Image 1 (cartoon, rainbow, N blue to C red):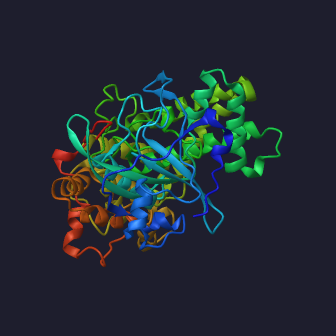
Image 2 (tube, one colour):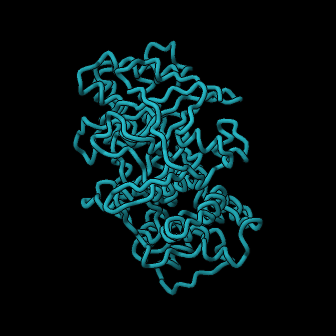
Length: 480
């Protein structure tokens, strides 16, 4: 691979150079061919012994210069100065044949100086969870890091109990976090804040390198991308679960999957994070948390840009988020006239979803078929809302078939529901059967359509049914 390793040029203040720790008898759990295409790997590459040895960290890659990145961040609202890549290594940056640059990162590659006494490994459980979520969000059209592969290793690690370990191979457009800037700001290294800012502009926004106000434009674009990302999360019903500043990427991609979840029964204050007892990162708090995190990034850039300018830019967050979110909801509803009636329709819809705890994803798929598929509910409010919706749909001038095609291309038929994920995990962890992981990944790569070449017609209902009550609004811990 064509390694470029731009980040290492920033100097040792920004990282610890370190090779991955060897692992015991690595074996492939799953490989994503579509992620592999980003770095010009063939679909068959993942099954080779060389791939497994190199991407588990057992064999060096020619041109790679592995390093653990330094960063800090605000976690649940409190500043933590002792973070950094405790178990992750950036192998380097690869340029593909299309001249795109991609980071390759190993998660679970052994302890670094940032490990804070931990073992530097990742559980097989958490690695599978991140692998499937990354590929699921990509299938939904949400900016995200990608998961190239999960590689199992025959070592037990200890969390609340002994667990199987793994290495997750992550591909990303950047690993620079809001917390990367915070690390240097809070340690009084303002020159390194500026160096990191110049590096970020040069490598991620090269079109503004010569602009005199490039620092302001950088922040403006980061704000816009963050607002757009969270609007997409809200629209698809994704809850990140740990929106700390060290988990926010400057390029506006979904970053670091922990106790995430997808909305099933519509519960606005749902948080999938068992540790989030106050609901700081609940579904309905995510837009506000995006604003809060951007404020923390702005504080690190104040000496370079100025408080007044940054305050003016921050005022744009709410209208920017509102605009993106409105656009997303218009596509989900198949409506293009975004007037006051549209606004009232959406507000009433969310009230109905909440009052009756309807399945968020399946509601929109039903709506695309309405009125061909009639509502089974006897609820007067729902029937009234559907009647109003149909009036607004008819004034658009589209046929039912046109509206359905548009909505079905926006609203997924399949999402990564908790019970589907648990089935895949149980088979992997209890039976060493990884087939359901691959099947789910394939299904979620194109979540809008049936895939008869992979799934029999009688199987589809299992993957599209409402989440069973025992799994609805499920919570997991940060280490799960």
